[in-house]
Image (tube, rainbow, N blue to C red):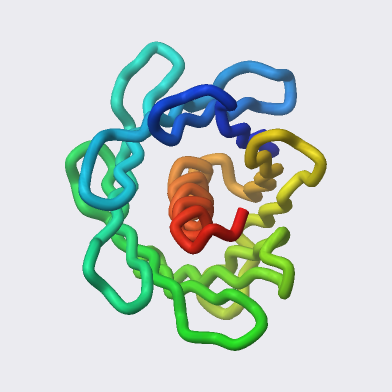
Amino acid sequence: MKLLFKQRLFSWFDSYDIYDEAGNTVYIVKGQLSWGHCLKIFSPDRCELGTVKEKVLRLLPKFEMYLGNRYVGCISRELTVLKPKYNVEYNGWHMEGNIWEWDYRVTGAGGKPIATVSKELFHLTDTYVIDVLDPNDALCVLMLVLAVDAEKCSRGNK
């Protein structure tokens, strides 16, 4: 399942639209006023599906993931020199990027591929292509991409 992740150009808070391969809106993401990033994920008919919320006052960024109101895990950046790596406390997943922080791999236990994420260049806003092997993992993979994008934004690294 491929998803196109596009940040909205004009918005007071972080807002994103996520489309499927046919161009249909699959998810709508709206930023909330809070201390740190707080991103709410909605279905196209405006039902709340999940939240990605930044834990503040930490040395390295950490984001909690919620499905509905239920905490399901978190993602935190590891201290690395060249390639960004993230600990994902959800289903044994791990996320690693390339040196330019444009392409990422999400793997499961034993290195099993879960998804790939590629940043598209030459767009006015952040745009990623997310390729998820199992459509049931799409929402949680989206949460990881939102956390990584918010973390990069906080560092001023777009």
